[in-house]
Length: 454
Image (cartoon, rainbow, N blue to C red):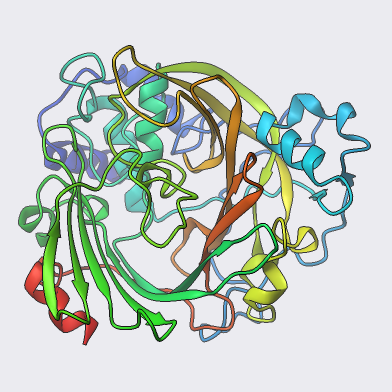
């Protein structure tokens, strides 16, 4: 693409995104074509070379890719560089979160973190990068970070952030496709290691992520996501379904949820489903705003940007994603199978959220560790009212290089006090997710839910 054509396309995105706000200066935004990646990560590697430079990431399927199977591992031959256990973790504390340390301490005989070479695989379509450049110039808050950003489109609004709340919104509004559907499993694992897999058909539509000018944006204005689910198994709840409409600004326009129960054959509106309300079918092991590691309104916390650090985080989790393993191979008695998890050294933004005076939430504090290349929360630690570390969770990312897009293939939520955990995203031995470039808002209504579950 010539520089002139690139400039024209960026200006088009700016005009379609809405009126200009108080984003960064043009000189700062130019860094996204210089020392920063198009989404705002540092292009250069670290000083000792353990984090390489970003050179565009995975942009096409590797040899042997079969679209009818889960994505093959392009890094299958990488060696294990280090195994971190409770016995040696004291040598690596500066690269571990408190939650990661607590897991190692709690399960000294069974849990370990296998560290592999760092692969900066993150990549996205060109229109996402163009939108990020426009967002850097346009996006702003109407008033001191309350509510939602204005003037952004498609992807993270603040590729060059200046505050904690901006980084959190970069995660919330990151690009993850336009329409994504497929079968995924979830399981709440008891102290004894027992669980029953709940399998759902999920259909997700992200109007915010559609290209500027697409009809979806006009038909579903101000909407981040619409999510339909239909339970496939176990038989006791098969046929139940739900629909959630996720506005971007949920302080002004709260989330709307409808549920369908097969025994009543009725669609009913859920009166409240937000913040620390327990997630459906999670055995109370994650809250609504734990979904996707964090989602929903940011208004109950004061968010402090602690800067960046190098940290061992889940990344390129193709073994957990493989068609050659089953949920029984992954889900263990106290934690997932460590031999299938892959950790790498990456730079992450650290954001600490403390509950505001007078606000209500079961988490008094939550610390988010957010990948510089994707704006995805990779690790989240949550604390109770007494300041005790209560829960920790991880998002295991892969590059769906047929799109391309970085998404979590498995989210794992550990309750450190109850010694239980919850997993969602199990898609092994099933058909891969289907990505489409468009979605029809008429398919995401309460009436449409009735037909979806039948």
